[in-house]
Image 1 (cartoon, rainbow, N blue to C red):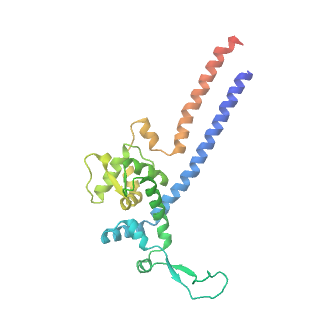
Image 2: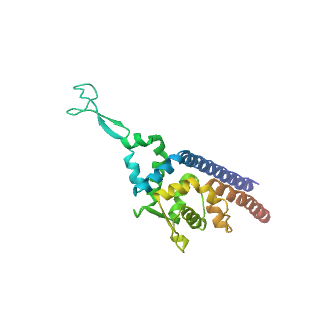
Image 3: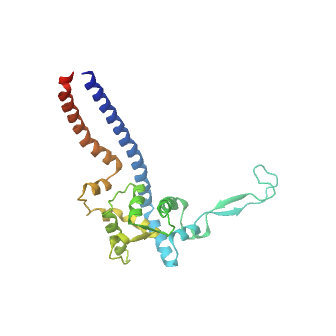
Length: 237
């Protein structure tokens, strides 16, 4: 009985660890989901910037640089406290382009975060992401698709955007502007996809749900095995 209770206690500890892992994953997922919601709220401005970049024939990243804050020299303050020695103090103002287009820095926050995620997976500095890199980058916005889903989603989006797609869908790539556009419209392309394999289903659900699914199947099975082994070993006590 003591050995049985010890094993049951160990299993309860494992269950508590699993619960902690689920809660930790949920905290991360909520934070990432807020990033995606923030980008969608800035969707109109993001689409405007993407159109401007296309009209100017430059990348979205290059266009964003023109909207960053610029330095503006202030009047010489002499020896006023806080003024740098031997030079005029500086302050920052919105760029002229931002003032003309009505672009605020708050509009750029989530786009810049998206650019940081994009650059994280653009390890070869090609300014494009392949389907696997896109799939991993989407997780930073609490979006999960399987390896089989990702190429098809990317190609559907590109065709809807007026772009040609390769015969082998896995070779399709997204630049930064297209990646932003996909994030804004991703819900339209996930609707029809259902995974038929266990691996695909796991890849297309959030980590917290993966933990939960594993625990739901593994814990009862472990309990049954434990009881069978305990009954089989009773005669040796």
